[in-house]
Image (cartoon, rainbow, N blue to C red; front, side):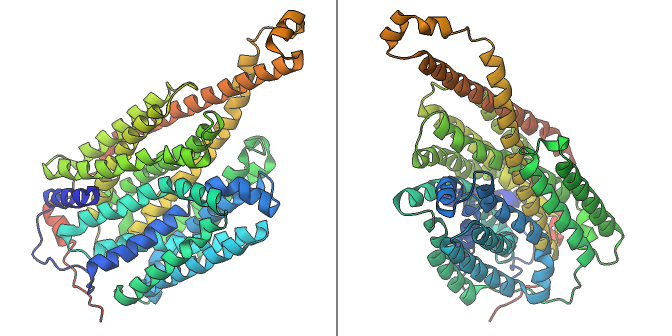
Length: 536
């Protein structure tokens, strides 16, 4: 019901952005669009889920693989880094070997890598297999978005983006729930084995119905790709190692940041001066796409940083089980789905999509402001209500932002445009997770020191025989209890400070909406006059 409402509402919304073009043919033809949509969305949800499904299983994996608390996190970061490095070459590979062949290869590789992850018996092995999984996942996300645009006529593309958006936004929220249930009832290995039957069914549907774009002879900008890959890897390693190495007090972090900055500068110079750069320079002149890339950074930070903070907070401070903590995150997904339908209806009534994005940012900011008032004595209803509101804010942002980013982009640039949007969201999420994790650890130490200085000396009171006999505790036990309470309050204050910082970041993004322009009707319609390609 909600999905149907989203589709109808967002279809109406696109009609208000641009009039129906003369040629309503989709860019690519398929015999069974609904079934192909199911296959494409299965691939999308499967690879999105794997970005978070293993999070709750890390303690079990640590014990099983003999890893430490620091090294086991590479199971997550290896997937993120490999995916971020591979995403930029999606457009080149799609042109070189065909989008159909690339999509099928990515799904096949993802299934094989998932099976190998489940069979892994050591930390180096699972990190290597997660890298393979991340590379395959990198191609699946932008290709699925492109296929959803290509197989639908312009009048149905908004609905297609709404369906795709639900998978992208809700997937990371369902990941911890599914991962927690599989880990509690079976084993952490089933967090990876579950991809196998889904992937096989997905591969069969794509093999039967997926059309392809024309194969083009296109050279890879090897220098540009290498520079970008080095920049991403160095930046990610800096973020991962920063907290343990005391950030810029360590020469390791200084060197990694310098390497990332130099490589990024080399990539930008190559992008603007090379005869055949990695990304077509026409993309750089598309203001809506570039602004959308910037907003996706904010969306990535807001979505992934919150997902990184809430599970440990719910489990550590409120004593929820892994599965229950995951369930408390589900209302965020429900709020997203219904907000996507609302966004479509607002735009269908002629409301500027930039205003809808602004409303979403304000709603998300308001939810974060509410979170700054949380206490350790709260009930579950507070998490549910706040989750619904925050999910609604993200849902209001995601659909109109994607529509405006692609509305002025020609079909031939969709794959590269989708790659840039997905890359920016991944980088935003990676930065968000690393920054909030580092801030949390530092703030807990600082707050513990401040709170501890205000606690009176308990030694004499605890040593009193009357006090000890009444409470049934010793002096050391009382001191341990006091330290535990201080730790709890210090952690809670640290979470609240980070929620406040995220609120400020979200609201600061609102003025950037002036950079987005509502696509002219004629220009937007002209972009769609591309011949249909049939698949036999």
